[in-house]
Length: 98
Image 1 (cartoon, rainbow, N blue to C red):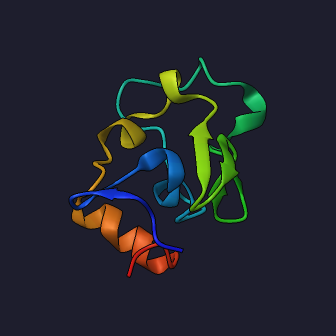
Image 2: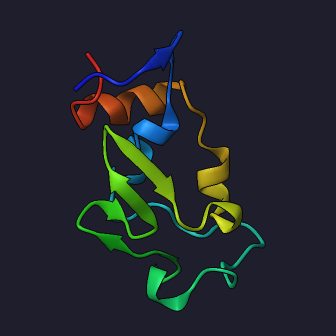
């Protein structure tokens, strides 16, 4: 399924690829320790994942998604840029980009 795009920037609320890429990601880095995030969403210094998907990601990839901890998300999530090479790489690996 192709995602709605504005230029080369995907609509993040219908994508979710960056939150479904690796069981190791996102790791808490920097001074922030994730204390605002509920314990059942954390594991070993990172966000807990269900399969290869962040446990805080709600909805259906490629259709409609949202982050349940968006206001308190880890720095690595805050720094991920929609439309970046990394964005297009994970979208491609998940079949969300032509």
